[in-house]
Amino acid sequence: MKLYHFAIFWLALGMSVSGAESESPVIARETIAAAERGEADAQFQLARASQRGEGVPKDVNKAFGLMKLAAEQGHADAIGGLGYFYSVGVAVEKDDKQALEWFRKGAEKGSAKAQLNLGRWLLDGKAGSEGDAEKRLEEGLQWLKKAVDQGLAEANLSYGMIHYFGDHGVAQDYGKAVPCFKLAAAHGLRDAQNFLGVMNEMGLGMPADTAAAQQWYRKAALQGHLRAQANLGILLNPLAENKATRIEALAWLVLASDQNEITAEKSLQDVMLGLKAGELDEARKRAAELRKLIRP
Image (cartoon, rainbow, N blue to C red; front, side, top):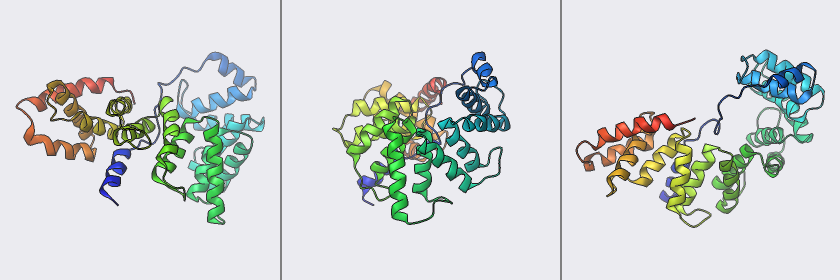
């Protein structure tokens, strides 16, 4: 791997399991009442809340029951949602073939999330999706693109990554990755924000723009994205002429390094001899202030 691409690879990695998450919403009494009356969408919303413990007590068995009730009424997202329970073995025995079946049913009914999950399932070649590899990859990409076309942020992130890295037989194309990452980033997905930071900094698929790179890194960093924190610290430059800039750069590196982010750890080691007396202590104080602003 060429050094240039190696740098791109490491700048972009460090992804979280999920993108930005909002604070747990309070489930409206009207939604609970509607679910009790048997309204499918309310059952689906309450199922998701019960599964995650958002606004109501966490209860995966109740969540599965509600999801099933909504699915039986033809709710597309609920149909695909049953696939999730089988895919991870929550409230039911883990069953990859059942998961694939429910993902496909939901996808065919128009659920963007089910299309995303089915696309990923096929692209990853998980159990139940055996067969001709080329056809499986083609179908997986088709389902993923359907979710992208519906504007699903997570699907745009996945599709953007495929073009960014050139995965699953798709040629690397930064230009095609950009709009996908922009949509996902606009929806608050911190991984996409970090990718846009990298692409702006390196001039990938767009003219290089360090100011824009800094903005995107900062958005992701404030959501707790460790690699973005490291990238932001490096971009600001802990040895910059301006003291305030130096301290903030060091602070972001300290934040990421304290959580064992390897790029930040190495960067701190590299600049340690060039720091002026007391600057590391100032940076730690600034890091403590920044830590209070982070909303994962």
